Image (tube, rainbow, N blue to C red; front, side, top):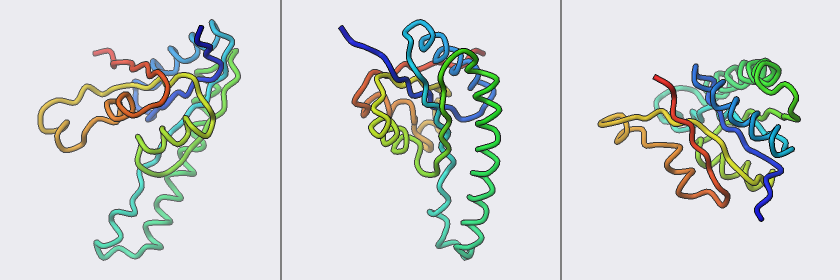
Length: 147
């Protein structure tokens, strides 16, 4: 029988993130699992060629990460009471970072939200959830936002 001892909860700090965290917390409590909560700050390295000095981009990303770390700390205390949970803030491309964290932390399940993009938004931005579902080495539970 499959054992779930470690859950990766990927969040984007949107208004839907607490609902995703709730599923992770409930599952962790029921299964006696721990939670690795992950926020991926967007990598701005792709904009280096747009006449913006790399040092400015690095400073901006540093400020994003610092703010996200404070947000993560508050998010953990608000959403994971009674569960062993650790927060991680990284920069990069969301799907790739989720894959990397899942392998690094040897997780048994990934829980993440979807945004339900349609039409041109989906074509332009793709779906991180879809990429993770297709490429993850472990099961993925996706939570659709309430409307």
